[in-house]
Image (cartoon, rainbow, N blue to C red; front, side, top):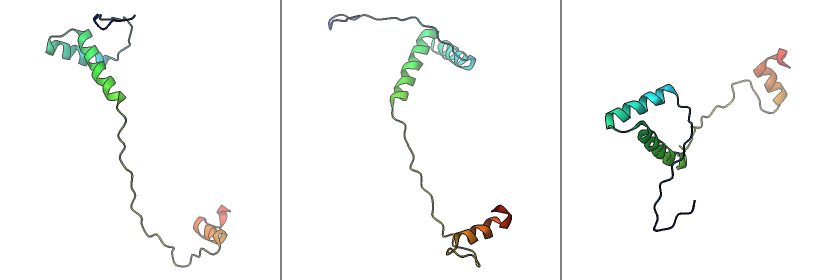
Length: 93
C-alpha cells in the first residue's frame, strides 16, 4: 500500500496469536481497569514491549578478584608430571 503524505490510513491486519493464560488474565484485568478493549491493551503492550526489545541489552562488567594461590609446601613446578601425580594421586595416571 502506498500512502501519500496528505493521506492518513490505518492499516489493520488480522492474525492469530497463541497467548498463555496468565498473559490473557493480565490483559483482561488491565482492560477492565482502564475501560479499554482487550485488543487495545494487547496492542499497547506490544508497542511498549517491542520498543524495549529494540534497545540493546545492557551488559554489566564482569570482574574477578585475583588471589595469590601459591603452592603448598613440598610441591614443585619444575616437574609438572610429578606435580600432577601428587595433586591427583598415583592411581590417576
